Amino acid sequence: MREISGKTRTSGLIGNPVEHTMSPMIHNFLAEELEMDMAYVPFYVEKGQLDAAVKGAYGLNILGCNVTVPYKSDVMESLVAFDDIAEKIGAVNTLVRVEGGYKGYNTDITGLLRAMKSEGITLENEDVIILGAGGVGRAVAFMCAVNGASKVYLLNRTIEKAEHIAEEVNKKVGTQCIEAWRMNEYDKLPDKKYLVIQATSVGLFPKVDEVVLEDKAFYKKVKVGYDLIYTPWETKFMKLVKEQGGQAYNGLKMLLYQAVDAFELWNECRVPDKSAYKAYELLQQAVTKR
Image 1 (tube, rainbow, N blue to C red):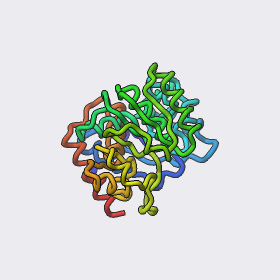
Image 2: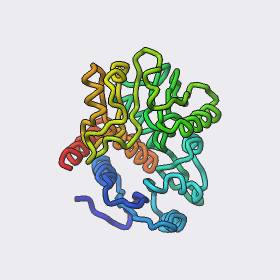
Image 3: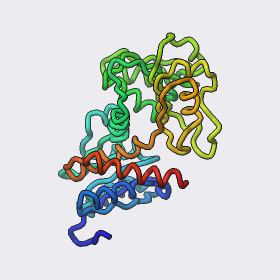
Image 4: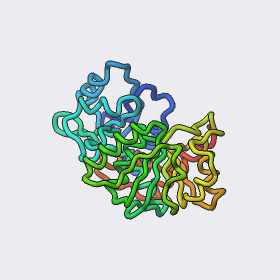
């Protein structure tokens, strides 16, 4: 067991709720594994107390924080600087201590990109379908555009929401690769193989028998399906992808690598692959026990 002393740096998670988080497991394991004198704890922040929490963290010499729902956008008002991607997306999940306050980063996106690369998945020149135009779908659309996707079809039940995101991303990134489509028009997509990213909460435990699209004909077009959900371990979306011969992955490695990216930013280090894999095994065990 690591000793907590006056030299130990503190980091943590700002959110509401925070009881469900697995972030302390990842960060405290990495700190022990890499012999970093750091401890990570969850901070429950009441509505209306976000700015006070960020300023208080700085006053308490907190090394850095992750930020989760519902504060990823609101927290930006309390920061002194932003990473370019986080500023474009308009959402921050990692605060890094700098002179006078905190700088905001979005390691959800860099973590997802790193997780996909670990599976041999690249975005450059790819045709991508994103299912869902909520906050996650919006961030994924930015990720695809910034990383050279050839064409991105953003499917959503409410077309106006998808159109707004497509226009925003194309303008901010300087591209025309994002197209907005109605979810029920999937059968009109060009007949080719796609990387499909499932960015809705449909299928999340306990509603494990739900899926955003049921039609098996759609899944014939999927060469790789990436579901950002990780509970259950294998979602119905993933099962349908596999049934039609595609590869399917869940979002647990995104959870891992968004934490790894944050840990590296706070500690100005590089987490070895073997240490990241050990942390992933811990996460797997925790998720499958739930």
